[in-house]
Length: 206
Image (cartoon, rainbow, N blue to C red):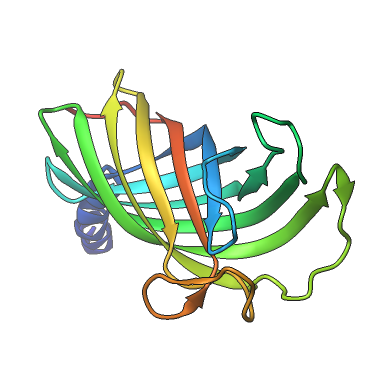
């Protein structure tokens, strides 16, 4: 009897903690560019998909951990007036691991900010429609980015959100033409705007 009572006392707070966890899946589209190359503009279209788990700290605050595939990069077309010039395409494939602090206000609106580790999975580079099979300056195996966003709960399960995702460290292992110094070093930096949708397995409490 004493053992059963002790087990019950241990399980009660643990049960309360698990009720504050929620999980789900997410997917979305994005536009991106690489700052520090010689072109400007969000011309590259990509996508992301993954899963998440969140921990509710209070009625307004929560932490969220995500794991997702995300495609970044750049695209530059020929001159829009003369249709003359070279075309360039870079696709960068990452496993992204973000951690967010989220604050909910007005019941359905949520602001978030966090950091993410980008694990490099591979790349594809193209010039004038032909693949370029080599790089003189390789991409970093792991890079760091900062993310800020705002979202809205459409239903108790579904959330839509906008995010700004920017590299904090250079994504290349070395110097390249056109590179810029953004924060701590000269290099190239992923610059991404995304629209995503998150589906929570458990209904969210308003």
